[in-house]
Length: 353
Image (tube, rainbow, N blue to C red; front, side, top):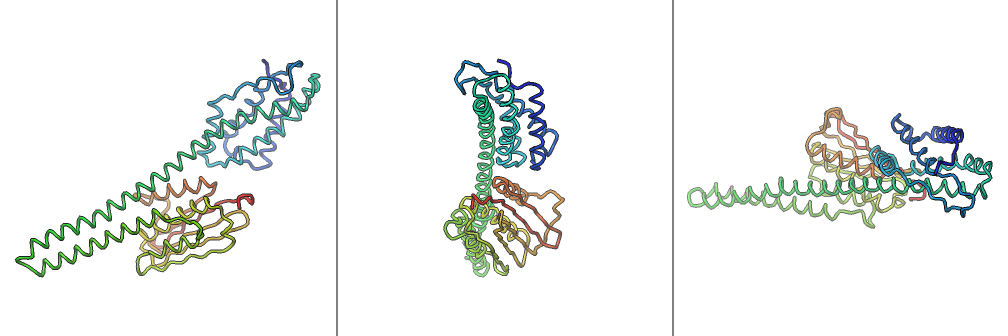
């Protein structure tokens, strides 16, 4: 069945739709390819609406199904570009706002019974059919990111157990073996090996306890500042730590607080492990439209323009992905010998607080 919207009507709808997106500063127009994709989706919606069978009941007309690959690609590309789903919902309302008056006008001119009702129902169905498919692709992408973040956390714990705890246990066992070897002929050296074994096994126990605590660390009912203070309370001796909080942090939803905690904990862990700092400070500020956080140290720093290697680089990727899942942003600021700061911004609509 041929589409219902005339060529002139389509041009009017496209023009009005793009005006609405531009006036809202929509990120869907940020690049030529994204803008072309948005227009293609709009045309797909208009193509889906058939000419009305005058004798058919209202809302019974069959619509052309979504072009699944196009719709999936849109959901996936927006997720990869870290465009929040609210932008897609806003674009859907703009399609309706631009399309409804034109479609109703053309239905009325063609003598279609109940033109306003038919125009509203058909346009809404065409939009929602495509929005549902795109949402599934978006959710699948985000679920994969969550899975990857959790997998990387498990890998990190495994590396810490292997590189630190297991290595210390090996040193302790070797020292005990050498203690037995040296004991008959050199009691002093044997005693030294025994002491080394004690130190190594004590270090292994400390690492295991610390990692075990990390697996149980959550914000829970204590609150984000208290959870961070508890984590920093196990910092190495000689490093001063502080958590400063302002605003109504109790308004932060539980799932948001847990993810923010994991990001800030990783930033603090990187500082404590790699930066050789004398001070590590965490700042939290609940503002009117979101949460601002900063983890700052006065350690060795580095050049952010150079690729971050090893575990620091892996940790940064995981942190950025977690923040992106919340619709936020992460900025790393550092200079050699001038310390490092990791700033996190998580937007929060009033309805979420």
